[in-house]
Amino acid sequence: MCAKPQVGAAVSIAPEVSVIVPHYRDLRALDRCLQLIEGQSFPRNDFEIVVADNGTPERAELEALVRGRGRLVFVGDRGAGPARNGGAAVARGRILAFTDSDCQPEPGWLAAGVSALAHYDFVGGHVKVLVADPKQLTATESFERVFAFDFKTYITRKGFTGAGNLFCPRSVFERVGGFRAGVSEDVDWSRRARALGYRLGYEPRAIVGHPARRSWEELTGKWRRVNRETYHLSAAKFGGNVLWLLRTCLLPASAVAHSPRVLLSRELDGSAQRLAALCVLYRIRLWRFRDSLRVLATRGSN
Image (tube, rainbow, N blue to C red; front, side, top):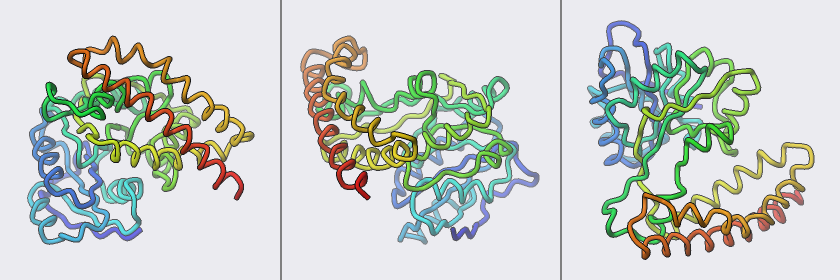
């Protein structure tokens, strides 16, 4: 990893919290994210912002955008996980708060997440799915409004939190170690933390917004990456390939089991949006079934 910090918006003493934002070539979203972080209800002198960039070509524009708001660190190893690690390496806060450059934290996000650490060892918050016009959703947006970024389920039922809304003391992060590349990094990190005895909690008031994926291509692009990263975690276990095959075979039937979520969702308005979401639900579960078999055939034989 190559990490060269550029100092900006310096705080005279070490801050209580370091907000770490990985970024690559999305200056408009980063600008909005930084505006919202600066507008937090948490006292501004008590936190710093660290932008960990993964090699954005528009370097002059990036430096100008971050200058006066936070510190900028350049991380040579590609991927959001290595970028977060690079940000954590130069962070000065006792507490680390992670969000992503395309996220939009609500004003009470930081205060709520930090407060929750009084009860848990690491914490994940709530993620709202953002759309441009709730009355005019694409089919993919309708699906995402129901199923995307369900951090409550991730945390309370599956035992992990996404790294786009994560709080932990620096001491916990250092003992667990950084995010690993090539796997589902947030799942892997959360599992390693819990294996060490650290307690994970859900804080619904620590809210960030994240834009919904709008197209089928964006949705399959996400699942193509997730399938491969998740397979690496599964294959590392005893009997991992067998478990992967069993899980894959259940995917088509899972669409039936999840259909009531669409029909009863308060995030959708009218039968047209519900029908569109159902179509994407069945289509994506069949796509994931075929793609998961391809992953097993190509990687399981290696």
